[in-house]
Length: 144
Image (tube, rainbow, N blue to C red; front, side, top):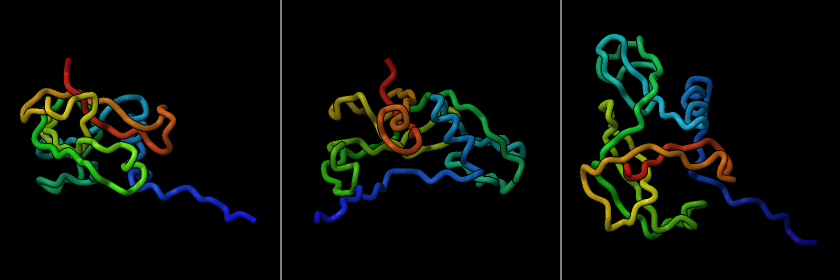
């Protein structure tokens, strides 16, 4: 008798809840959402039920432009956690969204030696619809 094989645990899959479901539904349709405060007017990311700047609970979902600039990055050459091992080398990055918030993400469709601080980027999505399990996740690629 052969032991039952189980899939390796995944460490990259988000766990949506009732509050974040609009974000993940929009991502599945190719749209990035932010939260904007009705009190101070500032946008923020990651989604929270209150404004991290003025603590107002008057926050609502807003569709982002999907435009960003590269703030910083690191090329990851080794990661043993599934599914990252099959993606190395990959770029982990922080981008400044056009609406103001800074976001952790990945950079795709760009040679690593082509990355530059301040380069213009646009959002694309990895995951659902690409034969992968889970939700679609925002990543960025160079404008062009």
